[in-house]
Image (tube, rainbow, N blue to C red; front, side, top):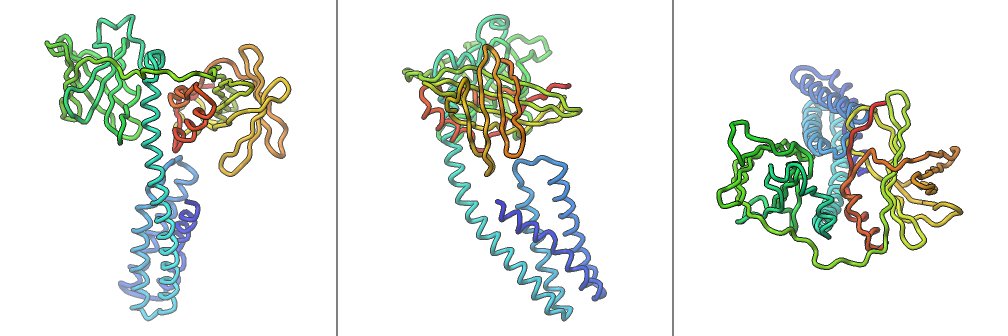
Length: 403
């Protein structure tokens, strides 16, 4: 992707050499060359805004701007040729050919890599689905509670679609929170817990509810849920009606032997003006070692933070009273030590050329992440495979406390 970006930047600045021949021509040819240069300038300004003032995790705009701008530059080369400026036309055509060949080669490689990533995503989705139903305790922790206040108000439980439909299963907890599952590859995915809880329709009708699901990457989904006289449920969403009947959840019949112990989440918040420095660890203990995932970010306070990337620190080796971690991220090496003192964790991060940075973490969480919380407790190898697969393209999000 770095090579594609460099070639893209080279394409962006090609409008600059067009200014000189544009000034040396006249009539419609000059107008068209200036329009092409203006388009290149607008694309350059857009890229400056994207680099310095936005946080885009996936740059789909590059794949739209590149062919459009390339076509305009080809037309400019034709205009230069018709204006008898053969050297300028040849030089522009040569540069365009080199950029096009380089991007073509890179896009073929990206296509192959995308196929591997998609296969990995299918494995990721299957692992997440299985993990949510690996045991009754996990099922209730992820989707519950199923008892208490609200249990008699909402259609609590696990519901299975009666016929083939775009939606496979529905889970409703005692708080009216719902999870709606849909097919994805050979497994099922769900819309997550974001969105409103079930609420009455407002027309006084009993056993009728509304809710709004808020997927991460698409528009909110409005749904209606009704209890049928037969005891089943009727769901209407996106103009599609699906009938559900109550069924036991697909809890795994056998449980693998656990060798890891989940120690919990530990976090610290340090205010720096309008920014907050957040350090958070998820910790697991195995035989003689410590496993860790961390977030180390400086973010704007009082705002929603999206595209926060947790770091898989791996397994730490025993070092005196604590554990020493070494990992690589974005081509850089990172080092840290972790010591557990009662309910607190002492984190010391060490970076080349800087003094060690010591932070005391309390037993709390600023960010919650379902994918991290579902990490297996069976063996270190399963834990390592989990994060190698599930963390492909994974970001977490959360509300940063106001300082």
